[in-house]
Image 1: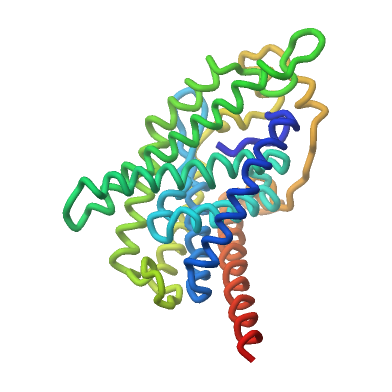
Image 2: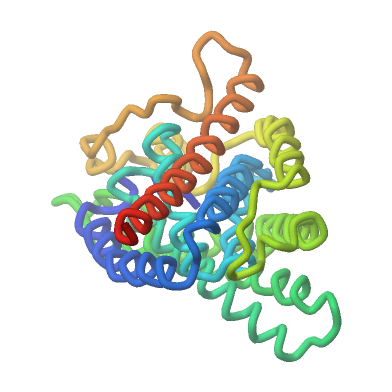
Length: 329
């Protein structure tokens, strides 16, 4: 679901980024008002869970792959506005450092995975929890909510792909960017997400949520200061060690193919806008480090990404506390 650069037109990217500005603005205000500074490090933990979840690629027949996102998971723990910020920062780290998702398409990726997914997922979760009683109502609600959320996000991505050949063509009538219309993009995106990828989101969300509920229930508290408890550290370490399982999936996710793959998989040509579009060289492309075995590079990438996310939100917490102390003095 990570849309690379040049799949969407610059105009589409600009519109999607503009659409996210008010979302980010409101989310930041809500997080400042509703989440104490002492809780911000937990937002980094949530972002790390999302980052790690997206490294576990799952294959489906036909040579394409997908993954969980964890947006509804974070929303269930800390609210949808916090989830929006956490997933946004995770997507930013992925794009800048690992080349997973485009720079120009960053707004579109955030719209789908940091806005639509957690907000739709959270709304569905709350709706189910009002109708389901018992101690596991939150797990049942989050399971259904996460499934609805990731499929809503996938549908948005499919529409963004599918409108490109309708709106942007060259003089010969060929698509300038993504060459697949809605009749192709919607079935291609939704097939995987309505089946395996949606199930992966449900399993990941409910498993981590159930673990947190038992091992670190204070994470869901609105005011209690929290350290990254040992069980959470162990869970994160386990996820890091297991990330190479994502390498077992062969093929590239639909909508993330290279120009060569597009030309060879039915389009019959390479859109000129994709050939001459924006190019960015990430520091650790595709989570691989030169000179290292692929599995080791993947693990180190997981460590680097998770650590950066935790540090970012820890620094925000420290900065917020320092500012508050200065104002008090």
